[in-house]
Length: 373
Image 1 (tube, helix red, strand yellow):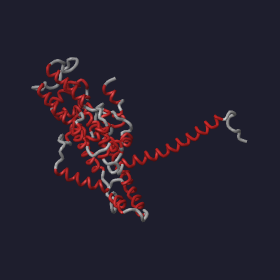
Image 2 (spheres, helix red, strand yellow; image 1 turned 180 degrees about the vertical axis):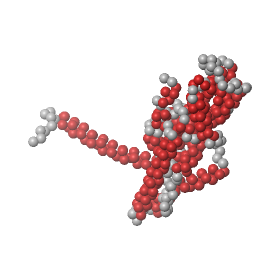
Image 3 (tube, helix red, strand yellow; image 1 turned 60 degrees about the vertical axis):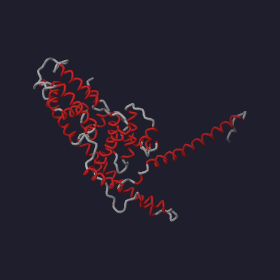
Image 4 (cartoon, helix red, strand yellow; image 1 turned 45 degrees about the horizontal axis):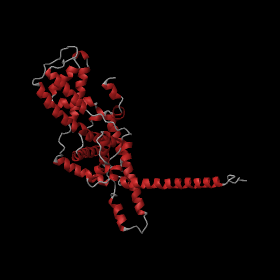
């Protein structure tokens, strides 16, 4: 089985690969449904507040009013949601740096967040609640052990229950799939092969075919420089765009190399897919260049410009006024659910206890229980 065939069996390909059109359609549907639910939830809360008993304390009324916007609810658009998700993905990278977790952990956490918000809205579940859980999940997926209490303490101002409050929500949003295929290992393999080619340890093309174009000058240095630049794009731009939804890990890796050194990458692709391969070489070059254009859309720097900060500040204020009031306190919702399930469990336990006592009582009778007439 080839590497391509193995990738096509993965959940990343089967469940999380989209065309740009289908991905936009999904996000638009999610945004529309979430906006309708926010307006409906606000209406219900307003009605409940209007019908509340007269002995409700002023403090409770104040807390209730603080989360309910006045007048018509102005919900976020799809583009506005995407900008907020992208910003919180940057925050996840910064938090990962603060916690000193490996690149794979940060990359996996960001993909969890981006996957979650395809079918969920920031108006329903705030990204600050989701990103902590996503990062903690990623430490498990990538085998980087982090005790829950230590993880919460390291973040600061966070309790263990805050991290676990959205645990099941995130699992559902990910469709119970946690595997993420990254392009990092592909880059290391390509660089090792390029280094061997630069030293002449490997033939340029298997079978001795000629490669169109001369070997790049100072190839060893070019490979070394391209390696560092490409890795920076994979650690930032590839994660903050939709590249993972539209391209395979190897295509993303080649695109990052293409940005780092176009001459070297084109020569490498021609080595791997010579002219005798027909139109395959041309198709691959077109796909890689298309992916490279997407990666260039996002700067590798994690710092936002003054204009971006101003826009994000306005969007954050808008989000506060259009959040679903019934989904704000995830910790409280989880606690209420557990208490409800606990109450039901107590009834079952009591019933079984009575049945056991009755059975024991009947067993003590030498001739068994009384025959009912």
